[in-house]
Image (cartoon, rainbow, N blue to C red; front, side, top):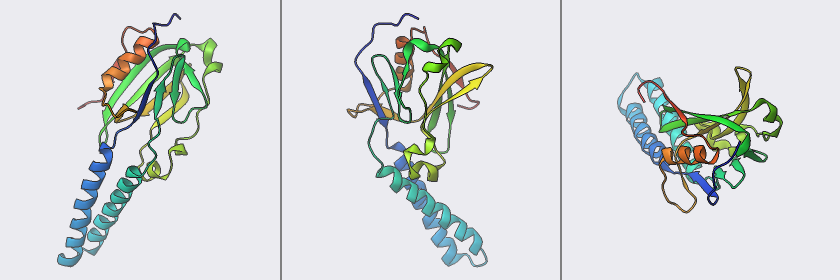
Length: 198
């Protein structure tokens, strides 16, 4: 497959929007839990539940805020590097791409799926488990990273991500990221699937 002319490497990191959401929800839930524990007799279990949820959310906010500022993925000259990949996913083996958009508790999430030609499946890099991003994501039940799988006898690479910005701090529109990848793999435009209510 012929590639379009390429630009310079584009390095993307996580935004910290989720930290603010977690902090706000954690503070509110913890305050409600303390109030329920002190004022609402007979509702001890409910108060304890609120306190546990509040402390869990605050802990997650702290773990996110203190996490490393490294790249989540990089659009390089010859392919895509993911945070948990052992190498590049070459542009020239990607046959098509699809983007799924849906909402989570904290912020919009996306899955970017790449279809790989059968004859090129051995050129797909290996991917480490999602736990490579550390304890913070395990606590959040929230994963950013890529993995390889099969669907309808086709090899697929799926990248799950959320808030992203360039490594220089410049914010980017998620549609711009998708359009840039589509340009680099010489696809007219990505297929977009939105979850109901998104």
